[in-house]
Structures are given as C-alpha cells and as structure tokens.
Figure 1 (spheres, rainbow, N blue to C red):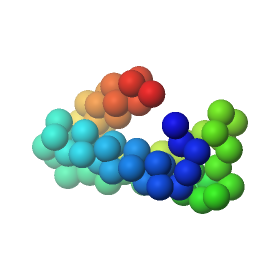
Figure 2 (cartoon, helix red, strand yellow; figure 1 turned 90 degrees about the vertical axis):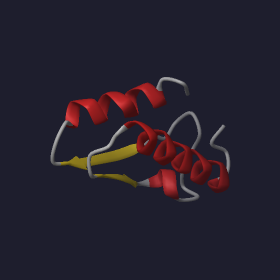
Figure 3 (cartoon, rainbow, N blue to C red; figure 1 turned 60 degrees about the horizontal axis):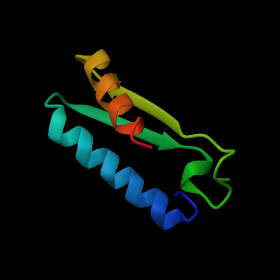
Figure 4 (cartoon, rainbow, N blue to C red; figure 1 turned 135 degrees about the vertical axis):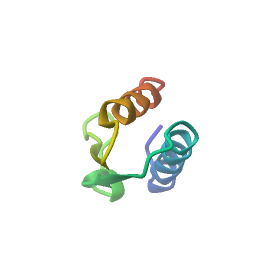
Length: 71
C-alpha cells in the first residue's frame, strides 16, 4: 500500500481531506520521519505524526484515529 513515495503522498492528502471535512477548529498535522523519504520500509517502518490544535485535541485525535483504522 505504501510502497512508493507517491502512494505515501496520496495517503497524506487523503488524511488532510478527511480531517478538513470533519474538524472545524484551526489545526496543524505534522508528518515526519522516514514516511516522507525513500528510507521507509513498508511493514516495518511507522508513521510519525504530530498534532497541534488549541481546542478539542481529543476530538481531532479521534478523527485521525478513525481515518487510520481504515488502513
């Protein structure tokens, strides 16, 4: 599923679209680490993710968790 950098970029776009459609407060999602590089190893590497919002962090966390549960 995440074999290529292009597929990982598509995943990030889908995540952003999913959150934007469900969360109305200002937020930032930071993705970092090997997921964004050719060093990523499907089935072995993880997704490093940081979340920033001033309000309703648990709601935003739940939305992201819901999205990720589909993968």
